[in-house]
Image (cartoon, rainbow, N blue to C red; front, side, top):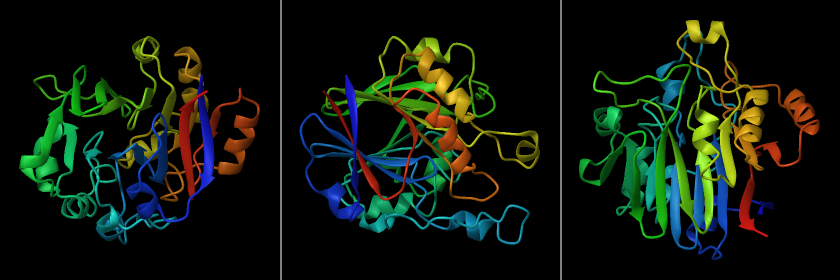
Length: 284
């Protein structure tokens, strides 16, 4: 049975750079959908937004993208990263202010991106010779002891290129004897729980900032409502979930107090991720 422990975070860069325990996957929340993961001496980063590039881009607009929380680490301090995963091409997941910094700080790091977004990744500063493309339904082993299965995600829709490549992906990571699902940006769609149920998933990382017509009309597609994320986990028999993708931009967040009250009525194991913590996932 998977167990999730919580420890206070001191220095994320130093903690991540140290060696982890065998059979333990440690996770740090980077804000929005961003996470850093470590198992032994393998270090992975998913969807890092560690700059203010969107604040600069959208300054003076209806949605100015002012950060509500500072980056927990500067991207140039992320050394010895083995792999960066981007679930899709939106700038808060494939950030031009973050990816080149990590590439420079970790010269051996490679970058996994949707095949549909290969050119965008190059334009955002990912070195072409360190780029790995993937599509839904593909399984790859980019590092010894790490397997990644890519699943389609619906960021309001299951969007594909004319050739059928998916723009939005989720990743199932198997390493350290554990299985973690990061959906990327996603809403419920028919068959998703059926894809996840047989895997099986020890921990799901799901975006819970919800969605509405007002945001969609202004070009901000949404994600699971908290109740939908919990329903997916229960349908797919996932006992642990960390809800994320909130607390960064005031137009695209949640009422955390109300959300935690809602979670208090749910089965244990489902919670909102918190800053300045390290989560250690093990088996009992």
